[in-house]
Image (cartoon, rainbow, N blue to C red):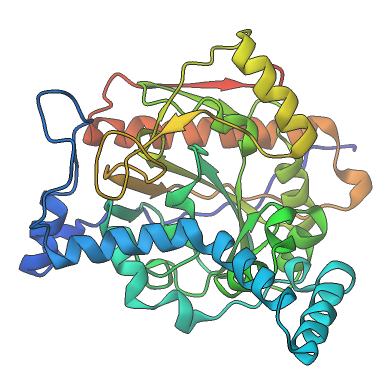
Length: 381
């Protein structure tokens, strides 16, 4: 490189985050005002009352179904394998063979179906917490984007609801942006479940998949939960957000190769959905969790939420609000492979971390986090 390459300047129009409460009908407003439950203690209610309104039961059903979906798909697979009709068994084995050896859609943009993402079912899903999506800058559809979601939380429920469904109005807030949420490859190895995820707009989180989507043209974009499984081990309700981002720079390299702008996204409340057993760095529990994560690719946080009919413990998330802010885009130049140097990657990675911190500091006070801080760490911390 003989001179530093600077991206073309842009002037995104900043917009004030919308107050969605002004758009709600009375029933929805009442629902959202009564969403948040305090953690169960001896002085408040442990078991759910019998007279819970129907709209709240619908919301709980959507969350329960979402959690059970992979197990439902595995059960259906077992039933098909044990079927006495050999035509059914043969067809299912043929499907498994295709899924393992030949399926390509997780790496080629998936099978995204907007009608499925627009179902009212997902509005009930969002209202369970509730989840809100806030636009702070216009994103013109004249380029591809790489969205970085933070924090990971235990399961990244905010990422799924905001960016794999239309429950919070992504297509209205960002017209012309065709987004794919990236997830682990193993999810597409579960029969039928991978098809379902793909129809929701999810793709495999591989370099191949990223490049395929971004090269499709302007507006085609991806979202990465950059902290990954490692960051879920730091998903504790706290005023200090620990983000595994210091040495995660691959997304910047992909952005430079495709001329894709980087967009920081932060969700207040993502870490508050579950209580996780203390696992400070260096503890025996943390060492075991890191070993499992390196072997399996999955993290194993020891956490508790609430149950279906009681609030003391369970795998269901607590009803706590998630507010997701989409920040200012960082324009990147499109460079050839030999032009992408470590110095250029470090430059834009630093700009991304600064933009994420500004986004966090701008809106943290609105969500009871005026004294909150972000701490960036690497994979070895």
